Length: 410
Image (tube, rainbow, N blue to C red; front, side):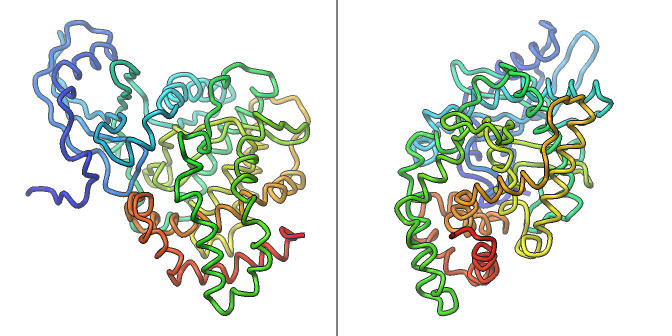
């Protein structure tokens, strides 16, 4: 049966010419350290469903090959940059996302796993990267997790157990990074590029138009109009406050803040599950920043409306206790971070919280339903329509009073 092309990203329907016998042979020679590898056959197909990702182009390659020991087959995931002209190429072309991700897969995460293993924790964070190159093109090749029975959560909410699995791995990795940063490790020296450093990102309408559209939404809904007075004074400064919060470690470091290596884009499509075991994906936006940042982001991207209302405090507590317990396990000798102080820092990062709710939450909801991020990144009218959806407006009836009640606007 011919697959439905509407289920896949258009730029992943046909593999580029360079994805050929020679490419796969080069990959396998390096991976197996065997110059006698011969590629017998290969088949390529889109690696993901439409809506699973945006900041790359991905193919699956099923390769049959032979060595002196016999004939084998292997499923591989090939990740590269967009080649077709258009918004995606313009948006990503001059970014640092590939060098960042290569560093994460080849140096940082293996080091984290090694440190945890030495402490008796066998956590694996991600699929193995078996090949990477920046010239003549940016490309990475991974072992395919699908044959290992991992899958992406699509068109349903993640369960609480799945969420805890993902957040637990994030907390462990951030504990290791916290310890290494305290020890002045140079492992993170090149990881300086958060989302706000993407070329022209701060001029993109998905950034600049979100808050004005949010204000229009408040004005248009009788029960929400009373809150305009809290948000109107932020109109000229919210984006800059969000940028400053993400870049804090690099430009305005504070002695009492908890700094870690952030994932940078910790949402449900950037992880795969086998039962409740989780593998993390997509480290293109990883950067050193405040411990608060991924937690606030994941409250909107991992949790659904009900969990944000009912499980927010439990979620934060689970993350933080896993973080501090891991610090103890790996032998951290410094002053133990405190939950009270962490909650103070969460409050201090209120501009991230406000920005995410007002500018990104409608698009996050759209993606959680399995829709394509290109819908809102490339189409202003579709993006505006997301603010008018009843689910979003209903949730504002809870989220905004909460912000008022905890003192965000004092």
